[in-house]
Image 1 (cartoon, rainbow, N blue to C red):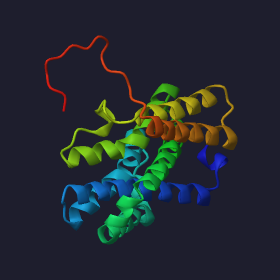
Image 2 (cartoon, rainbow, N blue to C red):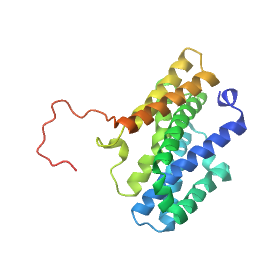
Image 3 (cartoon, helix red, strand yellow):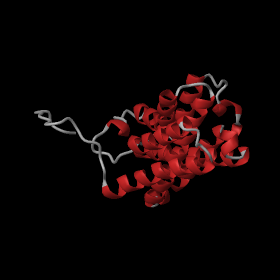
Image 4 (spheres, one colour):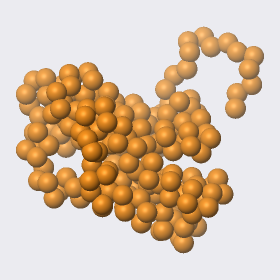
Amino acid sequence: MLQQLFSPSVLHALDLIGIFVFAISGALLGVRKNFDVFGMAVLAEVTGLGGGLFRDLVIGAVPPAAFTDLGYFVTPLLATALVFFLHPHVERIQTAVNVFDAAGLGLFCVVGTTKAYDYGLGLTASACLGLATAVGGGVLRDVLANEVPSLLRWDRDLYAVPAMAGAVMVALCLRYDVLNATTSSLAAVTAFVLRLLAMRYHWRAPRAWHRRSTVREE
């Protein structure tokens, strides 16, 4: 299905771009945590490859693409080198990094959902793996850095919801047999735009209804 939507070279290039941008966020967190270069590289690798690796292991696409294509492994190392030497400059263009991160989110939720469906999973399971592909690396990054995953924090702008919307759109297109390059691109753009709007207007998911707690918020 993926090869029918995009040429292999285009799909590979988009994958590497998404991995690179995600890896930058991992390496930057390593800088903020005062990690050494090895720690930065680990966070970059996990952030860039974690979601896709989890998906491939679940669907049985082994060995995972991260271990069969050297480019997938090297790309996070390049991101680490960039951040290691130029992190003050990268920090200054954090807004641009966030925009590319949102684009990677949209791409990965579509690719993840489609690939899971190609391997025989149902529509609901495929959409869930599409979401995991998009956000899994960030969750692993935060866990390794001893932080509450951004995905679970109420005080962070919506991240999983845009990816979920894109994955559900792909699942619906598969259900009604209308998935093509145009509709898959529309799903990716929808996730991308929703993420940008969430960052612009600080959209957040609601907490428990009539929440009453004496615990101090962190």
